[in-house]
Length: 190
Image (cartoon, rainbow, N blue to C red; front, side, top):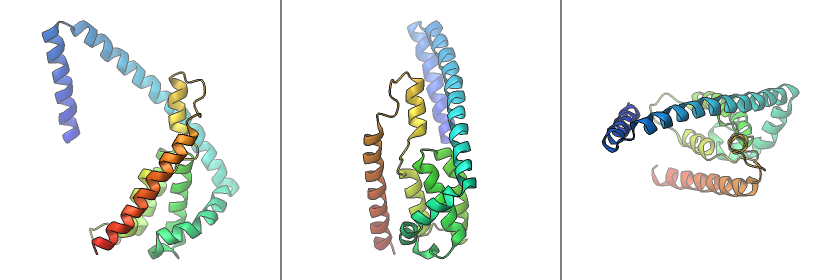
């Protein structure tokens, strides 16, 4: 609701200052161009998302996702000890992590929601494991930042994936800091 008010205020101020400075025609042209660019970008991202979601589904049906889940299971059991024996929750977390590794945040969301529902105990409070899930999902390590690469390709980048080392470093550090902060704060607020 607050975002609606912020956007309405932003739009109103733009119109007011456009009228005061005599630039309403330029403002109108910029708004129209921006809307057209937004639609083009959304369609471009939808295509990339469809491609990678399809690849993710092929990997799932071929059993590669199960293999990845088995590889991730030792790490996930340490991060989520309360759910170490819950195959459904760990499977959903594995699917979430796998999609995030491929840079598919939108495809990771359904698995993350299923995992969160499986973790929720009905108390009205987020458990340490649920907080860890949110942190790991938000800070996610990305091996292939497909969405960012698609945006870069759409903007005309000659080599959209040349950012890989920076993405690996920054996403690895963000996940590490997030996990350490979650562990520290869970001990402080017991």
